[in-house]
Amino acid sequence: MGERHLQKEELQKEELQKEEKKVEYLELIYDLIFVYIIGRNNSLLRQVEGGFVTGSTFMIYVFCTLAVIQIWNFSTYYINMHGRNGIRDHIALLLNMYLLYYIGEGIGPHWDSYQKKFHVAWALILINLGVQYAIEFRGHRGRLVEERTIRRMMIVLFGEAALVLAVLPFYNNTGMFLAPVPILYGMVMTLIFADKNKAELVDFPHLSERAMLYVVFTFGEMIIVIASYFDEVFTVNNAYFSALCFLIVVGLFLCYEVLYDRIIDRDMKTSGIGYMIIHIFLIFAMNNITTSLEFMRNEQVLLLPKILFLIASLLLYFFCLFTLQMFAKPQFKLCRRFLVPIAVTTVVFAGAMILLRENMRLNILATVIYAFAMFLEIWRFSRQKCEEI
Image 1 (tube, one colour):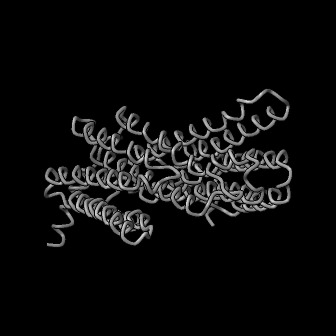
Image 2 (cartoon, one colour):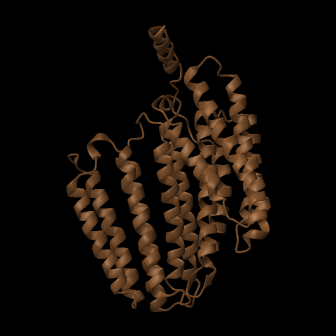
Image 3 (cartoon, helix red, strand yellow):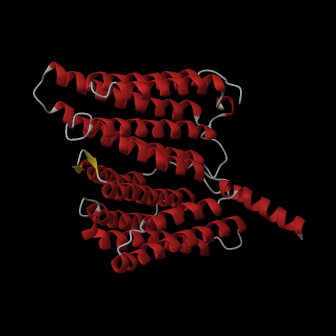
């Protein structure tokens, strides 16, 4: 019986082999709403009090950012495994796109006034995705791997939706902010339910391309934000800051571009769960960097907090980039001769930023040098083989 069962699973795995999926126009249209929400999220950190963002505002910012990226993550996985670009896919995604407007409008300094709409829309989006999996389940009966994966995704989505709805009355009655609980549930349960068989269902080239496009959209928001550097009367000082700010964005983009184009193994057989979770925090770091660039010329923000915020944001960004090398081609595994220069450069950068915090001209120059130093290390690494640690 055991041997027959193994043979049946092997046959099912062969049936699951698919041609590489292409990113459809529907997915790109769906992603446009997230461009709007990225801007709404970042606007939370523009509310400066006492020299920096208040703790409560920053907590809401973190929660809203992670909740929105997780919604995108769940949607992307469904399309990757079961999307057919059909009528049902269009209806389901456009409905979620409509509901995301309520989430976007709920993000702001007066979040308490909008939290009911925010949570109801959030729960309905999760339920909508769960229903799509339930419909798919009927068409995959007898396929053990697919049945198990779909059933587990339904548990994750419906379970998180129930927690989202439960948070509302709890907050109204106690005043305790427990909205991060559903997000943690979704992340933990996704990791618990991950198994190697799911890799047979996932088209990793499509998944990695979708993650890349979200990163590009986030860079787009960064470009929009630094446009404010160009709206003042032309002076040498304004030209200096605008040019260097632009170069920071260019340097960070080039780092990701080289990693994606040269190092990541997009033909790898993997469920991609770790890859997508890393991107959640990568995009979170990028949002923080976007706000840090705004803080650079904001005299209302105290020097030391905004310097530390920029350093922490950049460190998180590069930490996520290097963690993505778990998905690198075999010849690009991390090694000492790559990590040591990176570590030394980072320590020197952090020390210089703190020492130069009184001089923003040198500060922004140090950031440009750091971004391009990291790019050159990644580019050099992408052109040679490296023995594993």
